Every structure is written in structure tokens, then in C-alpha cells.
Length: 406
Image (tube, rainbow, N blue to C red; front, side):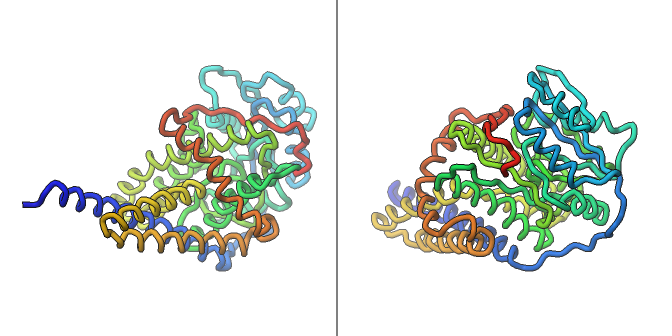
């Protein structure tokens, strides 16, 4: 009969093998996405087509940035494109500044139902009496680049699907190596991996701003919620419903990382906790829907969603490698070490591919050595998720510098 020691040995070996194999699968997915991102990506669009479009801008106390956002947006929009600002629970001059910019402004006051999802739902109801062909969502602190609206709306009409622009973060005026790594991680997620997913024919995640939808599609989804990453939830709901979002890398929307360290921490906490909560909630839904609908793209989306934020992914790899080495030397369990080492090579290769092809000019190679310090900065955010996960939407405080400097 097997002894307790033998049973424990077998249990540890199985646990390490399963963990190492799962890490290897996720690292393989990451590498495949980064390699696929190198392949050319083109869309067939109808040029010079007049598409009735409404741009919805939810704004909560955005007086510091709303004028810059609207000035840039108006310079890129056409007469058949209407801009509507939703001044949501504002206690500042956001609505007044937006009206001075000669755009449509609607105000919403509801202390109980707070969050971007409720604001967007309010805006959609406002335009329902005279619905457009395409609705575009843009955050109040983002700058829409030239031709982005045209590319988004034309691709939406051509494909009949939601379209996501490349939403990237600029470094603050006085960046630290931590800011550079953060902007790079953001680019890997929102540009490189999204480009790879769509190049392989799979849906991308929605990024929260620079999103275009056919009117019939966006009205089929309930947006009235207070999710802290409502964009990610929306994209997954649309994918399951049969309207998988596609990515348009040539349409660019830029934001800026906060200069203030506390604001940066608050922003990252919301993003990271929201990602992890969505991962837990939606991976089972995607697998069940994929089985029922016999859709391989839903299974791959589940795998893609399982990849945690890059810093957590590297930290998980390091922790599992250390654990595997301990048991390898004490119990001669070497197979997990080989699997984890292979996963590490895949992760490193994926990061180098993304850096060399998409971020070389933004991130000097020497600053990559700051990655361990960046991970250490992020670890408390993940421990907080285990103890007290953030579940309510909290607006990130804006820097005093004008958004026009982006």
C-alpha cells in the first residue's frame, strides 16, 4: 500500500505538472499572438461614404481636459458626425465648457447609479429618437488622431461588427522607468496582442475608448452597469452574442499615464482588479458558449483572457520556477522545471518581439532592466485583490497639465 509520503509526493508532482503545463499553454498563446501581430493587416473599406455617426463622450468632472478633447475631435470630424457629451454627475464646469465648444451636451444626475456604463446608456437613450448608423465611444481625457473616426465608422459599416481603435498611453511629462514599462505593457495588450488576435481571425477585447458600433448591435446590449472595466465586459458579451469586435490599428486614440503616483496607483488598481474579476467571471461563460455554439474563437478568447496582466504573468512564472526548483532538488521532480523554463523562454521571446517591432523608439533597452522593480511595485495591487478587490468605479484624478500636450 502506498504510504502517506508517497501520496504527498504524487500530489505535489501532479500539482506542479498541471500548473507548469497551464503556464506553458498561456505563454504559447502570448507568443503566437505576438508573432501573428507581425503579419500584415488590411481592411477593405468603402471610401468617401457618408455615414451618419454620433460620438458619445461620457464625462465626470472633466473640466481640465474636455476642451482639448473636443477641439481635437472637432478638427477631425465631418458635418454628418454629431458629438454628444454626457456630463455625468458633474460638480464642476464640464457641461459649460462643452457647450462653449458648440457640441450637444446632456446632463445626468443620479447618485445611486454611478459609472461610465450608466452614462453611456443614458446617451444611447437620448439619441434613440433619431438613431445614427454608427455610434462611437470616446473617453473625455483622450485625443482622437486624424482619420480615426473615418476608419472606425467605415470599418464598422463594411463588417457590420464593433471596431476597436488602437488605444495607447503616452508617458507623463516627467516619466520614470516605471512609467515607460507601464506604457509598454499597455501597448503589448492594446496593440500587439489585439493585432495578433484579429490577424488570426479571432475577436479582440474592447479597450474602453475609440470603440465604434453599428446602431443595431449596440442597442442589443445592456450597458447600464457599474462594472469597473465595463468595456471588457461589453466586448465579451458581444463576442458571445455573435458580434465579435475587430481591431483597426491604423485608427489611433491616445491617453496619458498620470504624473501623480497616487493617481497612477488608483488607475492600475482599477485596471488590474477589473481584468482579474472579468477573467474569473467570463472564462467559464466563454467555454460554455463555445461548446454550445461550436465556436473555436470563443475557446481561444477564453485562453487569451486567461493571460493575466504582463507583470503578474512574469511574477507567476518566477514564483512557479522557484517552487519547481525547490521540489526538483528535494524530491527529484524535474519535468515541471523543464516546462516552466520553456514557458519562460516563450514569454521572453514574446516580450522581445513586441519591444523590437512596436516599442523600440519608446522604451530604451536599458529601461527593460527596470521590469523587476515595476513588478515589485505591482505586487501589492494583486495582494489587495485577494483581500479587498476593488468593485466600484473610481475616476482617476487628472494631472493639472493640459491634455493637448499628449
